[in-house]
Image 1 (cartoon, one colour):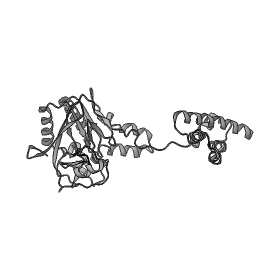
Image 2 (tube, rainbow, N blue to C red):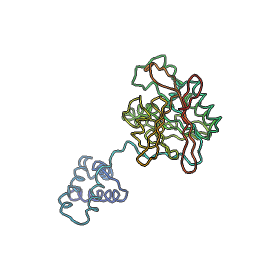
Image 3 (cartoon, rainbow, N blue to C red):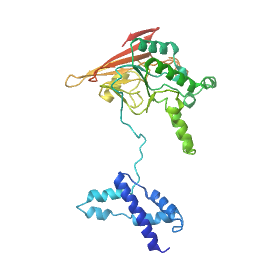
Image 4 (cartoon, one colour):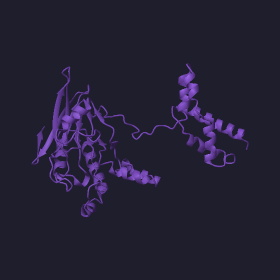
Length: 339
């Protein structure tokens, strides 16, 4: 076909995707448009590179035209951005997850690390929540461990004990749902170990990505477990709940203090396996608090046998206005101690 015919067909496709980009506020790369152009017109263009040449030809820079214009700049820029690739977004929905208003008395547990959990401490926390009439439970990250994906040296004997890790996760979620009715599971840095591993495999084998879904992996009949991505924080009335890995740095000594300085708002966190509380007033005398929740896992893992960890959990109550009372508890010698 003559060059003019190739140009006209390419211009028609480019105009189509320019209009779509303007309408939907998104961009289409020249490579993408060239692929469409070739696939729709295989008898016209020799290959994708040939199609791409004509796409580039009809979308040649109009920078001088835009620079010299004083009117319709918004429209001209919109057309140009319609033909530039969309930005890459690693976090598709970073908005906070808001706990529904009907849940007003909630047990918060964290850092069970699946089969590294401490049976006695976990039983104490659940028993406390049931006796206090909690209507829901929030698992604030690191519910699972995925030891097999750890960056630390791994014991073959320990690995063998994790073969039924999925069964443990399902059994524990079923128990929590039976005890509290509603379960909110926020992923922590350990919970996403498995997903990140599947993402690496998916570069070569795209179908593997479907196997990474947490809701499928931990599914059971009649499950009402709400899965919350690790990068989304939870809003519970006027309190914010994070796992703790979302903010880089801060160390493991003054955990509550450091996280309050980072969030500048009422913050409940876990991740560091330390039970702490800290409070700061602002310039107007409004008091903000930060609470670090202890873990429910074994206190002496092989990779870090000597540490400053403490076991614990929390209960939070709120009223219609969102005002809340945070009750942080440390577990020591089988007893709960307010912190």
